[in-house]
Image (cartoon, rainbow, N blue to C red; front, side, top):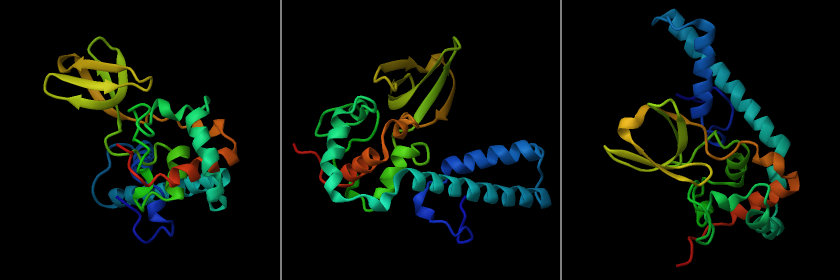
Length: 219
């Protein structure tokens, strides 16, 4: 799905996946699940477009309130690096590798900004709205087991016999396929309240540091 040219909102700024999911859920709740093709189907699609528009506008306003991203300057990169490495409140390296040190729950940081699409705005959004655009290969899987336990984490390997995942606490689990009763995709392993533990200045410093990570790790 998508908004095409009707939205007037920067299409590249926010991934639509999560917003479309929420929009579908709300439309379904409002209109019921017995929608047929034709007029009701068109009404559903129109309502869905309006909801996605509204959610995207809310996301943009939230980013603008928090970041003021246009105010970020290069002189803050050193402070951002220190924050990444040493700030216990956010503990970035628990999940992300930098210069070969850190966890594997999220993407490695070296070379992160080499992709031209990963602008400062993109990086700010990744911190503030982690569920809006989850990096490929780092989606969270939520497994309901046959004994009614629920486990979740990033899938690291799987075959016909077992699934290996890493939890948000960096714990590795191996689950036999025969023990899995249901499976679904969950939200990002990155907490969505990390930015609340940082001041606006710290958040801008962190984004500036991340935006300079264009080189791959040294071997």
